[in-house]
Length: 183
Image (cartoon, rainbow, N blue to C red; front, top):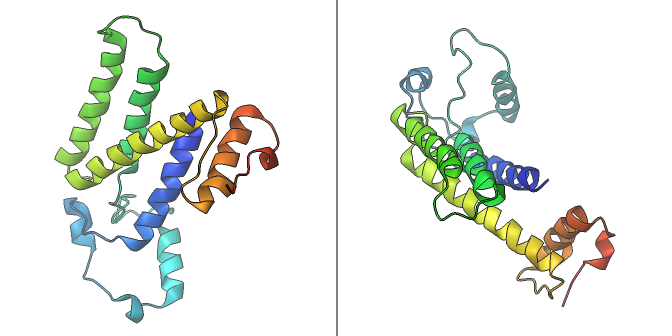
């Protein structure tokens, strides 16, 4: 459930970022498909939804490429979560662990290959790794706070009304109302 919470949170954030951040695609096949840029004010709002839905349909000309979804890399999120899960939950008492290394190295290599194959910019991959590490650490800090029953002091109202109660409910199964904090 922690993996799904982390992944779901990151994909929601990625969806919002994709809506407001547009970068030219580094992949050569995508560059050939883009005739030019169009201002938002010049676009018919129905075309936006139709074109978004067309991404899910097979198109021989595009060969099912997903062009333009650069910021931030969803592939990197998956690779990083995989490495973090093994790093956090695989039992180890040794200073050096071959099993963990056998997961971290392919994950790092996959991220490097994303850059080398020009599927993503270096910045996309770095931001995705940073967002994943930060979200993972924040979630586990919240979980630790819940299980150790320490007082939670929210920074924003959203933390006290939604985030902390939701994570506490998922972790403990107790009613959300017992965790809502406005102090």
